[in-house]
Image 1 (cartoon, rainbow, N blue to C red):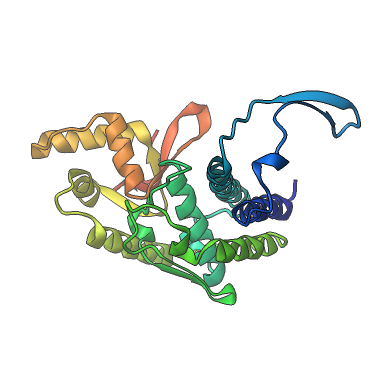
Image 2 (cartoon, rainbow, N blue to C red):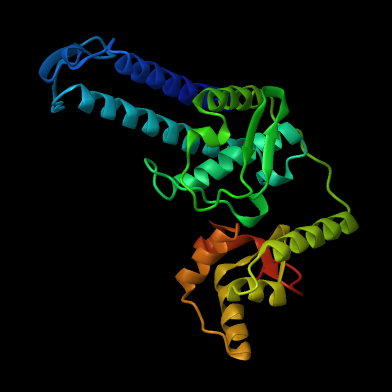
Length: 288
């Protein structure tokens, strides 16, 4: 399916769910309109089939609660699917997008997807250090200020409400119509300068009392092109802890802390896991 259709479909699904929710809230749809038990319906193939619906509603309050949960679920689905679609369309991470409006839109979806991993019905914001900033899509007047949201409950008002979110999806669907142009390779000096800038931003935002951040500052390089195998990075961390007298985290806890700091782990060739955005200082390439 084309990316524009994927985003348009989840947007349509969310819009329909909002319409049903609104009708329920206004009393236009009541429990009397909803058949339960066994019923005969016509399938997409044109056949009459019998289905059983075990839905139990003990009043209009249950119906309103259920409709509200449907909106939350449709919203979460739209976030997750849109994030996956954008990953298939664009090569680099959102923060590297040269188009400022599109960059802000992609970052908003990235942060929402990150937050849904903490719970789809009651999500809390999960904002890596590099994303704790204000994102604005000027062409649709969409804004998400993520500078102080990390760890807080996600509210639709954080980004202007569901109406603004639907506009964001429409904007992203429009952007997905045209394949992104490949950017020219950056000069070595420019890449090094960008890496130094990213490292400086990270160290300024990182907690000085966090041993993992201290390890990154002492032994690692940070940047969009940095990467290293997960096992090798953890071994270096263990060595650093032994040399500095720090208490060593288990590999799973170490990985969770890296994720919290904004780094991404992916499975690559031969089934191995690699960390993206972080590498070992002095390494000439990905470590095997």
